[in-house]
Length: 126
Length: 491
Image 1: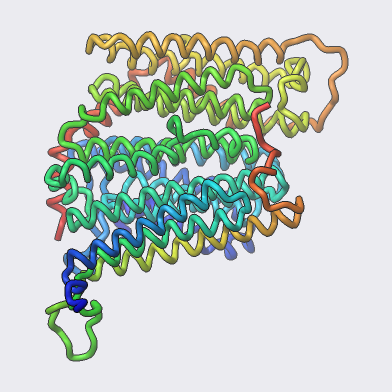
Image 2: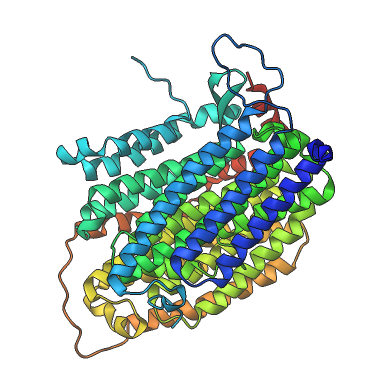
């Protein structure tokens, strides 16, 4: 009954809808939340939605993982490896930025006792 | 073993030296190397100039055919590379000779500054969209950490704000790159450029908008530049001089490189870019009028100049492009000069607010005098270099019979004059008692005086460098030659 889900068009449509929803959730959190960690999480969610979109749209149903195991030399039916490699790289970069952000937040909180963006008033137009 | 002189060194050398920093720290070579590496890159850039002049130099590092990494060096990117080398060498010399704060002379600052140089060079050189994203993050992360380096509340606040806005920019840029890959199946600039026209229209607009938001935030264009003055105020002025001097310039170059390579007919977005440039210029100059902190004033002035460069480059005729590139170089030199002076004043007086600077001309005559020189160079008065580059831009617009940018540029110069003279007047105000700070050595001024000398030299003898900028403008416009070089390099 659910075979229609296997057609690439429907599947890709679902991926697009899902990842765009995630993107909008991240954007909402970025603009509406005030706690620094929540803002960092929102950015991570936005990044994640882009990765999902990339990997989701670059593969079609029935394709196998782009790994050449021993003795296997044929490329038949394999998903495009480039998006997966790029996504891995991007995940690592995103992780590093997130770690830097979290550590800066912790230091800022230790120093000033707050973690609220609206309370950051050290630098402003005078 | 003879090492070939190829563009890869512009990225590899700073990375190698940065990651072997424990060795240099033990040998007490941090400061000499921080000065030596950018100088070496500058010399290498000059050595490569005759080669690049004949044809763009394309280097492909083959991993496994058809996969490889492309680096492209043409006359325009060579100009930027040389500028990055010169500017970071001058800042390094300032940090070394100036006996600056310990946190700027330590291992962390050393590593981060070299990574920033590597990132900026990579941004300018890369011929591949995903590598562009990676270099954008390398330059970004080192910039966030550099602005938070002092680890007090203002510095951490600046670092956090920069990190948040920078990551958002990176997400938008990544989104655009992903859409381009899904549409064209390629990431190499050459291949993308040749099939970009076949992407359906609405998708082109979406990609363009995402790119514009991502790179607009990074290149500090209106309305995405609300965060800039906070960062420049919170960071150490020497670090801010690097941001204003090389980081923004690298991103501006990337923006226009993409525009000129991807679009067969850049005229479609000419109005948009010029409008953005004009808005950036006018809004920033107007807000700069009422700033009370020298660093914020310089940040807004820097935004105004970025707007002017965008206006000139966006128009896309050969004359305005050459003028825009020249102005870009001038602005780097001027803002380095002014920010480094701000660093000296900050160290001497512990404050750079307008009220506290009154009467500084007595205590620090040389610094005040150089500040006046820098201000006049920003305003574009002869015989300083700002005059020549503004003149080239205005001449370019006049030749094309487009008059509204000329009016706006002159208006912006008037507003600039208003606020710079307010600061100059304060510097020379008579004041009874002035707190005596720590006296500065004579060597502290060496890099700053060198910068001032360069400004005068370029103003008096612009013909020395004229050919460089015209070649740069031509190579930016020569889309076919660039595409051929990039596509031909594919293994």
